[in-house]
Length: 317
Image (cartoon, rainbow, N blue to C red):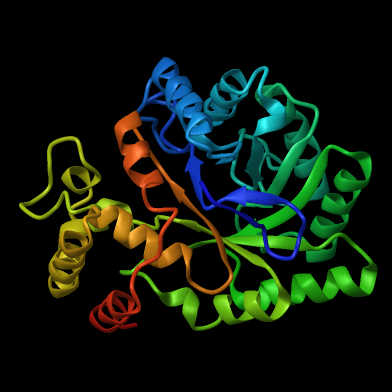
C-alpha cells in the first residue's frame, strides 16, 4: 500500500480507501439501503486493514447509522491503525433540527457518531453537503469547537461547489477557525467535472481530494461489457448502461490497455485517477473481499505516459 498526506496536513492516508455506504440493513429508516450483511461487512473491513488500507469512510446517514456501528465493531482493538472519516448533514429524525449543518445538529450528531463508532474521537469529520439554511460561519465555528474539544482531529467537506469552498476557506482564515483539509468529490475517467474548478482550487490551496465513485458506479471495472450482470448497480439503475454506451470507445481502450500491461480495467482506472493532481485517496466499495483485493492492486505502480495520454484523449472532458 502507498500512503500520502491528506492535502497539506500531516495526516497520512492510504491511496485506496474503503467506503461503508452499502454495509448494513436493506431497509433503514434513513439513507440508502445496505447490500452487505453486518457480519460480512466486518470481514471486509478487517481484510481491508490487513491489506494496508488505513482510511475508512462512512457517514451518520449510511443505512441509518448502522454503517457506523459496523465500523465501530470491526475496528475494536485496532482503532489506532485506522483513520476514521464520517459525515454530518443528512436527515436523521423527524424534527426540524434533525438535519443540516446548524450548531444544534452538528453537536448532537457528533455525539451519536462517536457512540456508534465506539470511539472518543473522529479523525476526519466532514460536512456531507452544503446547508443553504445555515450561516456558513455557524457551521465552521461548530467544527472549530469540536477540534478544540478533541472530539474531532481534522475537518473536511463533500459535494461543495468551488465558490462555497473558497468562501469557507476565506471565512476560516479571517476568523482563525480550523480549515477544511479535504473535499470529497466524484471523479473518474467518465466524470471529470472537478477538473474545471475544484481540482485547480485544491492544488492552489493545498487541499486533498478524496474521490468517490472512482470506478464510475462499476462501469470502469469491465463487468458491463455484455450488459448488466445480475445483482449489479446497472441491473437496478438503467442510466448506467446509457453511460456505458456513451463511453463505448473509452471502455474499449481501457480494456486494451489493461490487457497490454497485465492489469484489470478497474486497476488501470483507479491508477489513472489516484495519480491526478491533488488526489489523496480513492474510495472503493466492496461487497466481497476479492473485489477489495483487486482494487488494492491499483497501487505500487504507475501507468506508462503513453497509456495516460490515450485515456485522457478517449475520455476527454
